[in-house]
Length: 317
Image 1 (cartoon, helix red, strand yellow):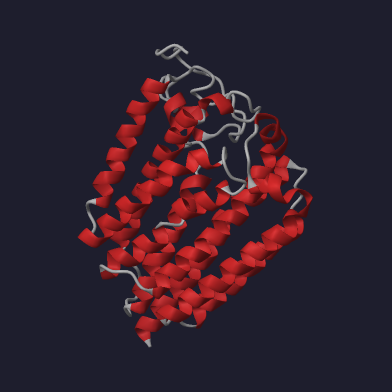
Image 2 (image 1 turned 180 degrees about the vertical axis):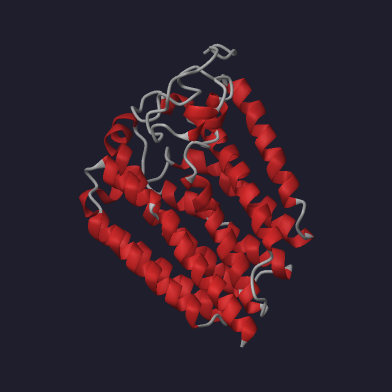
């Protein structure tokens, strides 16, 4: 592949929402980089952000504060967007040959020739630098916790080649914010954030299994492994199990942090949402899988709203 971009791009990526803001508004030269960072698909940074915001809110609740520190929430938002983009860029560099063989991914910037691996590496470094600047705003312990996450991020793209459980690796990386939010507030970890982290891993395995069903047939042809291929037609019981495990672990985290009734009410509503996902899942319909996967942003809002309300109620009582 040439080390130079093929020039201005006016195409779209196969699995992006049609008419998204990147396709409509960005200059042609910027579109491939925005697509590589998945700025046209914000669900990824939402899923990375939620454990951070949940943890910061749970920590504020435990500390008796009426709300989580807005500055921390903003930093987590910026960091989630930057590091999700960096992670996707790194994943695209590593997976460029596999992506070229899968219908849904062969139109991505690197396999389609819009961006060279060298250009992608420079873009990766720029996004990682933004993430570093964000991380350095926190206390020393939180900085160390943040750096520790890089091991999981580095290993994740290779797991699909050697194990049927790459979704577990994604959960380990994507749920790291459950540790970060607490560490930023208290400068240490405890049982509550660890339980929240484990719950986040179970939740991630569930939603990413749904996502992976879109590529199950192509993955089988090229040798990519996943829980979607492992579970196959029996996915629903496994999904129910992981979502139930996530709910129990989140409840245990709330208990360990001394959360009140509003947090549990939000969790109960969230459990209904997860049950709806299991009930309506059709693993043979890629559109259904994508829609349910994206609905986990709403699940994040439900839990966050419950935690925010609990913070306020705890502070005023």
